[in-house]
Each structure stands twice: as C-alpha cells, then as structure tokens.
Amino acid sequence: MTAPTPKSGKPASELVLRLLSAIVLAAATIAALWAGGWIFAALAAVAAVLILREWMTMSGPFSFRAAPWALMAFVAVTVMTARDEPLQSLGFAALVAAALLLARVTEPRVGWLSLGILYAGAPAVAVVALRGADMFTFESTGAIAVVFVLAVVWATDTAAYFSGRLIGGPKLAPRFSPKKTWSGALGGALAGVVVGCLVVAAAGVSVSAILVLIALVMSAVGQVGDLAESAMKRHFGVKDSGVLIPGHGGIMDRVDGLVAALVVAAAIGLGRDWYSGGGIAAGLLIW
Image (cartoon, rainbow, N blue to C red; front, side, top):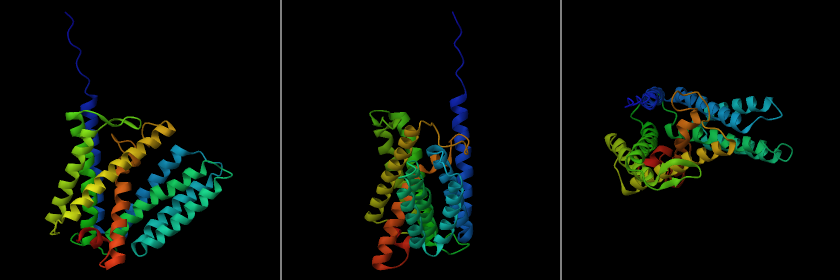
C-alpha cells in the first residue's frame, strides 16, 4: 500500500502572506489617516500613481513614451490639490481624460489611458475630499467617514472570501471571476453592513436606516468594482495587475472594491453638502 502524499503547504502559506500584507497595508493607511492633511493626501497620490502605472502596464504599450510619465505626474498633483478643491481637481482629470479619448482616433490604445486617468484619479480625489483638510486628529467626521468606507469594503471582501469557500453554490459571474459565488456576495454584503455600522456607532455617529442602506450600496458597488477589475484582467490576459503586494498581486488587486465605493461615497457626500451644507463627510454620515 502506497503511503499518502503529504499535502502541499502552499495554500496555508499563501493565506498567511496575504494576511501579513493586509495588516501592513491597513497599518500604513490608518497611520496616514490619523495624521490627515498633506500626509494622507500624499499617500492617496502615491496609491493613484501606482494604480495608473499598473493600468498602463496592462493596457500598453503606447507609441508616445513620455505621455505615461507625464500622466502619472498629473494624477499626483491633481490628488494632492484635492484637499481644498475636490471638484476642481476632478474636473481637470475629466478634461485630460476627454482629450485622451479624442486622441484615440490616431492611437486606439489611448482610450485606455483616458479610462485609467479616471480609474486612478477619481477614487484618490474622493478619499482626500472625504478626509478633509484638518490635521492630526482622528475624531473628525472626515476620518470617521473614510474608516466607514474602508470597513464596509474590507469586511465585504473578507467575508465574501470565507463564506463563498464555506457555503459554495451558484457562481456570481463565472465569465469574469469563476471563484466568486452568490453565497459569498450575500455573506460579504451582510458583513460589510454590520461592520460599517458598528464602526460609526463606536465613533458616536447615529446609525440611521439611510446609513444602513448606504453601507449596503457601497458593499454592492465594491463587489461590482471587484468584478470590473477581473473583467479587465481577463480582457488583457493577465492573472494579477502587478506584483507589488506579496500574496495579493498588484495594488489594483487590493483596492478594486475601494475604487468604486469611494467614488460613490464622495458623490453622496457632495450631493448632500451641495443641498444642505455641512461638509462632504457629514453629508455621507449624518442623516
């Protein structure tokens, strides 16, 4: 009788690597969030540049080589200036994206650069706008708003992974992501709502029915963002967007859900602020 072959330790070691990477990233994010001001804006700008770089690596190469570097510099400056004028920063990014979209007449791949500007720039502008310009305080409404979005998306991602593996069942979108299931999506949404509401309640914010609905919407939007990034990778025939983060791949692989959720959260806050005042973060949280 042949002795059983020992199981490989790779899955367990990969999970540990993913966990350690996630802890390091979370610690760096929370530290910058605590500091606020230019420190947090700089972190958002670096993240936006790295996202755009991975986007261009997947969708390129481009015939005019100087353009990618110029666009990364433009995105960094746009995000850094979003502390005071987020709509103006977003408007500049939209204008550049529109110009690139027109340029695709002579260079078809430039259309991907246009989308990349918005994909990298919009969520970074959104998170800087949500955090606000105040420095060295964690009790501000802006900090709570960002933590709320992070908590919803991170809890959704984690719970979707484990509930999908434990329960299984019908696939959510097998064409784009064969491993995702409806059980994972529903389990992730439930966890995202619960954890997000617990976070704001612990910070002293009243949890209204509308805020519960917002958490649910952001959880769903985050999962759609995850699927959209998977669809892009399939389109370009790559497994990961990059190799920057051990166990996770590229930064796009780590923040795909946050990209969409941050934009939706900032849009809700901006809409409320325009209608009733109080600031973007308060517009998202205070109902």
